[in-house]
Image (cartoon, rainbow, N blue to C red; front, top):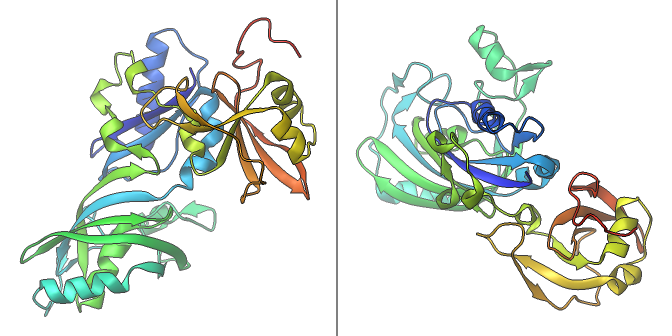
Length: 333
């Protein structure tokens, strides 16, 4: 099996639970060889889009993890907790101001763009070799370094006397608990996250997801998405078998040689399996990025190329080798 599965994770199960449930479902069919990994942790109390990588697609984890994310978060204003959510006791903040629309909207604008965040104490950040939440649960205070994150979009969806709900599009590594708390602190109080839904990871949408309780029994086929979606931010070329063999053998290649064996430029369909994509004529100009994705003539994503020296390209990552996923039994070398 080779593809990407979006699962609608409910509150409660961990990200690892999603992987274990999917693995158990595969084993019930007799498939004990397909590897499964998740591309981006979602806290147990959170719900929404969890991206699972199947088979050779596990090698695409770095690409998927780098995509921006979209969240809808609800926050209780005028309260604080050690974890920043409902995992630990919520305490009312003394003298919290009234939550009003105009100041909140003005504050949201200030959080757009590049901002500095301190991840919460109850997080998976490693400090001295251990997860920060492990230190926190033992009552050990540790210093967690700030990090830069990018907030692309920030929209107020709902507001009442005690809660506000925001939609956020942000870079990977953004902590929504921290974002809600920092917004509230800018207004002179604090806030606790009471609900978080992840609605998108890059091109992978929640409306494409299989429900967690639908993982068993298989079949998943209607929900399995193209691995090439994981490289939708890269120039993607369809090339012939001759070039693909050279690439997977690790040979260095000049750009003109790659274009000589290029069939077309591919743009994956966001809702289709790995056999569907649209074609455009390949450009003769060099790509603006130093990384290019390669599909074979059946539109199967097999490799990622990288420019290692001026006009010298080599396979940076073999995704689906011929011996792992043969295209046809008599494919010549």
